[in-house]
Length: 250
Length: 80
View 1 (cartoon, chains in turn red, orange):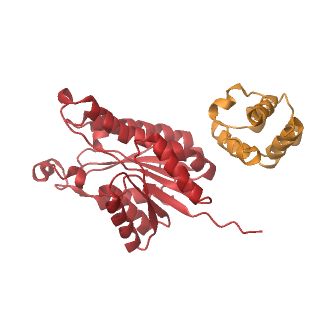
View 2 (cartoon, chains in turn brown, purple):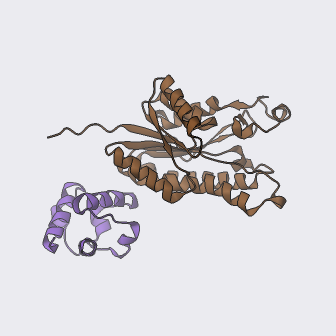
């Protein structure tokens, strides 16, 4: 009889091509034994760069394209992936894909509201809901949701983003209680101002005055906490929101 | 697949995989109580059914299921 090979374990990072997502992919590859499944939506070149970064630290991985907003596509792509990786399991899910469409609420277009909710909140649903059954059967798993200080304290000019992230925080707490018995933890990481493409347009010099640490954070600093939460070391932490913001809101 | 085979297969994996005592298995037995299933354990039941019968159950399928007999009937219906 053919011997059944041990499953290869994967960590999926949505929006893994750039910014915090890229740093998370590389950190996970450095610290843990997972193969990294790097999701991207539109920027394949950037995703390949991330994969190079993963390989440069001795890790391995692959890239997978889907738009987290499109539930049908998410299911189709993940099912197709599973079909080619029959015995393998995605054990860590990092819901990192997100967009901002900032503007004062009084001027906000419905589209800007919906797009942000669709990516951050519905994207979390589309990916996590599709994978949770396998995690339950696996009896071990890690779900880590990238949220934001905006989802906790609210940020003016970001009612849409604050609403989406706040909702994901609440979902994190609820889901954590549903699945804890199966050794699946669900946590959220809430960065403040982190230097990345998403914050490139901000006035760093002016803004850093209101941050006790007096600087923007680096994506790698966020990646460290994600890596810890993705590891076995964090087994008794669930339903938590970890702030990482230089003291701006604590 | 005859009803007898369905019943036999289900009873077999209930004993083998879900550690149900053989004497507890009766058509009138309450599925949830007999198996001491919590809501998450239904995932395992779904997986066992898929592996044994090749049909995928969803949450709604269980709405009408109280007894083991209901469960046998559900699988028969799904296979027909």
